[in-house]
Length: 509
Ligand code: HEM
Image 1 (cartoon, rainbow, N blue to C red):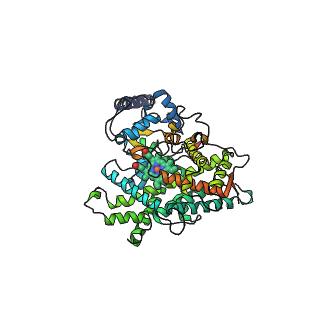
Image 2: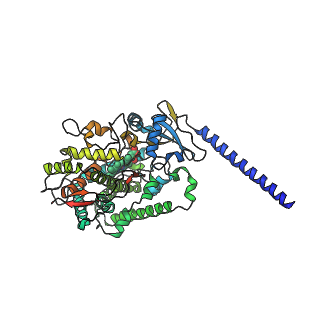
Image 3: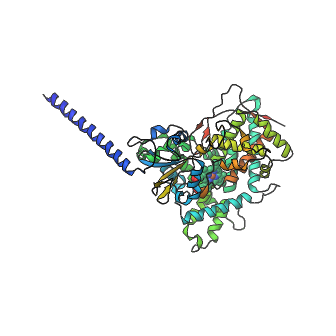
C-alpha cells in the first residue's frame, strides 16, 4: 500500500516537473519571439537559439545562411539576438555611411576581461571620450611609428626594430633547420613580432629564450576562442559559473598581462624624464602631465590615456604573427610562388641591403601575395562585434538600440560576385594587366574593417608583415616536409590560426 502510494506520488511529481519544464520552455520561447526584431533568419531552439547550427567555424555557417536570408539577417545565440551583416555594399553602409549608428561595442563578458573592462578597443562606449582617445592614440601611433631611427640609415624607428627582429628570425629559422630538421615556427615568430611591439610601447627588447617574455606572449588558443565573436560565455551567462579549464586559463593569462602592463607603466612613471621621451608610454605620460585638465581633454582621465598603450600592444601582438604564419603556410603549400617573390627581392633590394617599408611600392607581386594571403585565409573573419548606438533602419528593418551586430568580413572575401573562383589561391587577382598592384581589388578586400572603428594599425601591420617576409625570403627559402599533408582549415578565434605545421629553411647565401 505504502509502495503504491510512493509510486503514485513520484508519478505525480514527475508529471508536475515535466509540466513545469514545458511551461518554462514555452514561456521563454514566447518571450524570445516577442523580443524578436522582425528580420529574416533561421528558427532557433528556446534558451540556446541557433548555437547548435553555428558549428566550429561560424563564419562559414553564417556565409551559407546569407544565401537563404540575405545580407541582413538575425540569429539567436542563447537568448540574445544578433544581427549578421554580409555583402560588401551592406557592410559599407553599416560601417561607413551609417557608421555612427553602429559604432558601439556590446557589453560582452569576454570583451570586458580585456584591460579590466576599460579597453578603448573592446569596451569603451562610442562618445566624446572615445573620440578623444582615438585621436590621442592616432597621434601616439603616428609619432612613434615615424620617429627617426636611433643609429642607422633606416627611415624610422619602427622600420629599424622590425628589420632587426626579422634578421634575427631568419637566423633562428636557419639554426633550427640544421641537420635537416623541420620545426614549428609559431613561438619564434611570436617572440620576434612581440619584441617590435614591446620596443615601441615600452622601449624594451627581450632575448628569444627569456622565460618571462615567453609566458607573456603565450596567447593561447583558448584565449583566442574566448574573445572571438560567438563566445558562448557572452550569450549564456550561467556558463561563467561552471568550472571551466578554458575560463581559468583565460583569467590566468589576462591577469598576467594586466600585471605586466601595471609594472611597465609604473616603471615608466618612476624613470620618466621630460627631455627624453623613450617610447609611446612616455609620450602618453607627457600628454597627461602637460594637458589642461579643465580644457578640451577633460572628458578623459589620465588612466584612460595611459591605458591606450595596452590597446596598441594587444592589437599587434597576435594579428601580425598570425599573418606571418599564414604567409609561410601558403609559401610552402604553393612552392612556385617563392621564386617569384625572391626574384623581386633580388631585383629591387639585392643582398647588400635589408628590405625597407618603401620597397613595398616597387614589389607588386609580393604585395599581391600578401593581399591574397589576407583574402584567402581571412584570418580575422569578423570585425570586433559592433552594437547599435540608437534605433536604426537598415535595409528596411528597424534595428533597436543596443543590438549586437556581427560583420562577416570572411563572406565578402569569398563572395563569388566579387572574386572569380574565390576558393583558389591566386595572388595574380591583385595585379592589373601591367603587373601593377590592382588598387580596386585591394579596396574590396576586408580584413581591417572600415569606417568609424576601422583598425588604426593597418599600415603599420602591412609594413611589418612586408619587412618580415622579405627579410626572411632574402636570406632563406622555406620548404615543407615532402610527405606532410597541408591543412588550410583554421582554428576559430578572434584571429584564426592555422593548424600547427612544420617547415625548414634552406640558406640562400
Ligand atoms: C594584420 C594585422 C591586423 C589586423 C588584421 C587587424 C584588424 C583589425 C580589426 C578587424 C579591427 C576591428 C574593426 C571593427 O571593429 O570594425 C581592428 C581594430 C583595431 N586595431 Fe587592428 N588589426 C591588425 C593590426 C593592428 C596593429 C598593428 C595595431 C596597432 C599598432 C592595430 C590597432 C587597432 C586598434 C587601436 C583598433 C581599435 C579601433 C576601434 O575600436 O576604434 N591593429 N583591427
